[in-house]
Image (cartoon, rainbow, N blue to C red; front, side):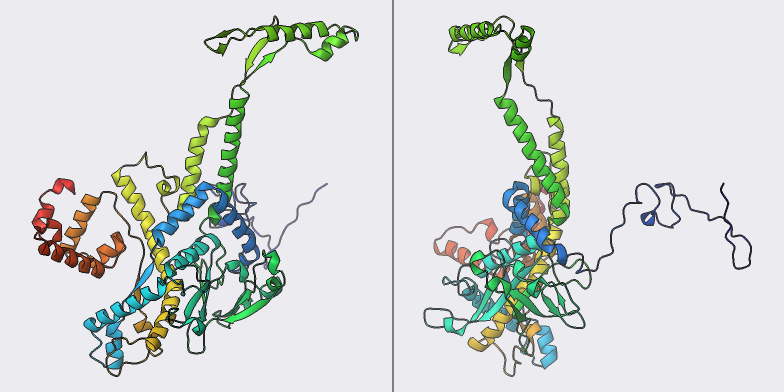
Length: 544
């Protein structure tokens, strides 16, 4: 027996039945958006938790990073993807070119001597000092005295794209300064991001997030860093001790440099590298690839076998336990021992009566492997921000237009990553170095110029150079660059930095040296030395 329940409204009358909006995709759901549906078969079980920025990552950071590193160590696709991003974003000589903001200095101080000419002289002097420090054969820029500044930048960027964080401590080591030794006391110590964590691995708190001390506004004020990595068994005592390192000195000199790409507001750690979104698919590809390889090897080794019509146990049971099968097996053995017939060095298979040769054939759907691999690698390329051809290194199915379009799209992401890393990691190191240069060296400064601390942003302004974008068709693209400069749509500085990755002034100075040398030796100056005109460029439009 069942009874109906009637729900009454405020007026005492029965409420009308609820009217649900039918969804074309799920078949139901009383919500205005299909994405919010909880009744349909496709969406009912999909209810992810709404995590906080730090809560969704910090608890699982070590597990994610260890898996990404394992793939980057042992899988060629993952290692190649990391290498492509490194080589295109940072390269072998990532460096700053000083570009002081002379307009801000002039308007802020009223000193007219802060002009473009002064900025050029100042920038060249500071850039030369940086090269002296960054490329010192003694490697005094590195606290471990192992790498140049560019090599440390590349390693820090690798940590960022694999681990999610780039971390370093700036030390002041005056004991290293002296004749035949270091000229500057500023040194950089790269820190493995694993060592940045809450003391005793405690849960995050209001003022401590993943090892980062924060104030009421969420700004980092200090960093809790282990004295040794937790994986160093020989430093077990130090690995359970943490030091709180302040972010900067009281006058603003950086001490800890921490760079990561934030995905949400209020995030204080990276922890998710570029391979994290595609980690599962990469692991599936590794497993699939290994399985196919094992199957191919097995089929190659175990290619055929001989089948006998008699089973020993079955015959023995049929004969009542009598030894009736032994003569047959002995005859088979004697037959094969005596039949060694060869033709041209190859043995001819001769079978005993009742035997048959059976071949092992592969029944695996290997024809689908190539397409599956391409699909996964396209997914990896999309997640890593590079082209599919850069990941697979397969350019067989591309032409000039498609290759250039793919590389241009990838270049936007790579350029953005380089710029973010320059601002977040390179700039604080450059600022600390320039601060010391102001104290140690004589720089071209006008009378009454303010000190570095007063105008840190103006004096420390610079442009970071990395590897050039390169060309798919050098002739057509270089001609297009010349046309763009002639039309006023680009500059020599932009073209040289973007396509070659060099300083345009250094190139001009080198060209002058070469042209003068041609004149000294009495050799006619070639067209590339400045005799080419705009008409020469456009006279062959079919080459563009």
